[in-house]
Image (tube, rainbow, N blue to C red; front, top):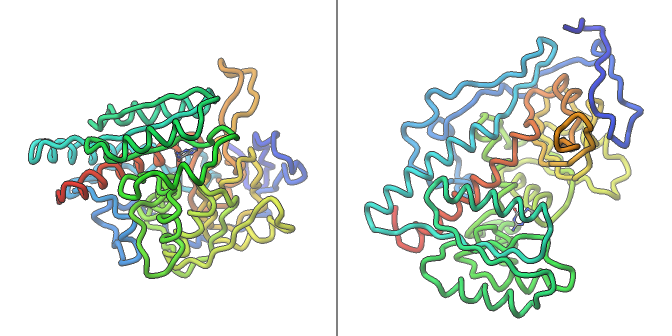
Length: 369
Ligand code: GUN
């Protein structure tokens, strides 16, 4: 075990900012900004601002035996935000609800997935989503079109799914091939079935005060649900979102703002990212850059949600690579009060939120409470 004055040698060698690789532990003063406790949903006060995040699940008996995972090294103080475990519980709740709905009104939620092209990562995501549907009892429909399909072909399938009453959610896997107009295609999905929350109307409503989107994008929603479930206060906190993508960064910033955080977005053209991130009580990183956020970027006691899932070469792994986040985990653990691991943090929550949105859609369509 390292002594307090030892140097940490984190495995963050693929970071582009190698200068801060070695951090003397005795230079870091930890001040807890948050008291992190795990909360079952039923124990969390879901304020009016959080109605958007209500995952619409009957959760009376849940989470009573949930054990908190704390990083094991005595020098390591951050609590591990265990997305895998939270997602598993949410999936169990969804499965129970689906059984209840099926028995009461004979309806099974349906999710249609449209995949265009042969990107391996997209195929993996779609396979995982389909498997998760099977796990909880959602019927999934998949259309896989070749890379050179036309926009009209994609629109035709979307139109059919819009009209199909057994389909309650439609997801078009992104990115689409470059010759397609993403905006046209996402706009064609019925807003009542837009379980990804990417329809311009849903995103517009998310951005506006006093408006309610029908669905919230799954990854950002998963981040906020994790903060809630671990009892992290968002209201009044300084939050920094790293990345401004339509899928994660931008909606995550909007959601944090709706939760009354003071939000700053850091992106590839930001001049002083370290300085800005260092002011944050809550960091959501969706930069797609392995180990970019070093321990020295983090305010002591901050809560870190790492959305990055980046493959880096690893000759010792049977696959030749392993997955790391945007945040140098080993360093961040020494400074933050809580952190999501990669893998096992936000990733499983994205799928759980997709299932939750699909269940909500089916309940809404059939007026089932
Ligand atoms: N590509 C990467 N993430 C996502 C997602 O959450 N939804 C869709 N549709 N495509 C993605």
